[in-house]
Image (cartoon, rainbow, N blue to C red):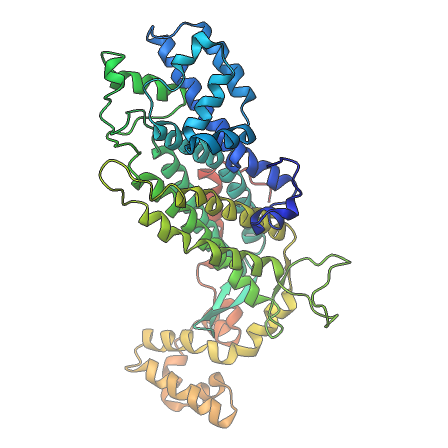
Length: 467
């Protein structure tokens, strides 16, 4: 094993394709095997510090342990594991080799493996969530908010079931993602804050600690406070899995919102729609054989990464099951949890770049609306007629749309020719008649609600409005 191994010799596309450069270095600080042992050693250090607090270990043990923690590396631990066949004991042995013999007895004293492993994993997830993931997601919400506010009055053809519906504004459409992602961000913060640690021994009943201190629960509390963690109300040899399950669920559901946005934008770049586009660099190639192609590669990549990630939540749910106080059926599967978090982070980073350079084709937005404006006035026409007393306005307008398709005449023209509708038309205001002549005016509360939503989430997330 060598840390100098070429990244392209790694097995996972997450390493050699999707997280090269700065992203790889950043993710490695939290989720690499090297980082795993560093975080576990940090918990072992907290144990030594707590043993000192309770008068069990001498104060000099802390400095000894700090040096040992700094010197630990995954290569040494794996070599030791070849002998022990136990990764935590291998880590402990490596730490013991780096302190004077008189302090070795205190390393891992009173602990079981998953006091260290589970607590260190929670530390990593919380740290990454709070230090990296939440700021990246907040940046994305800020970028989408800027687009929403800027395009708050830009009219877009609404679409339901893949069909032309009534108008919306592009800003209001984007505001929906601001709201959904803002909600998910707050959920991730809450889920992260609920994650707890443990230090309760082989079956969670504090058996070993009770031989060292009078109040083992207090010992656990003091130790976890050093790591800024709360203790689990009850644990076996592992932390109850529901809270990490909730957190990973939050990760996956957040990814779902991003995938939904990306899939929509992928379709909005279709040739027959062409309302938005990704910025295309001068040397970028869309197809190996069709030089004119400009594919929505970033949106497609995000959807594809989402497809890889979503099924992994099933494994997380399966890991809720543990036989009695402990089995090892999650020891392999839980190692893949960081991939779920990493894929979301990389998707957020990719989407941040795209949103910063998003291109809107306002002419095509208008064209697509105009191509359907004769039929999309059917809803406001029916509502207006019903409000003015027509006994079956929906059916009357439905028949007008069928007649329009048969004759080629416009719905509004047919409605105005219908003598049975004249008495209702006479009651309409000028503004209402303008809507029927130009459905672009039929956007309801979209503009005001866009501003309201963007301002709400900017305030809740402390985003400085620069737009």
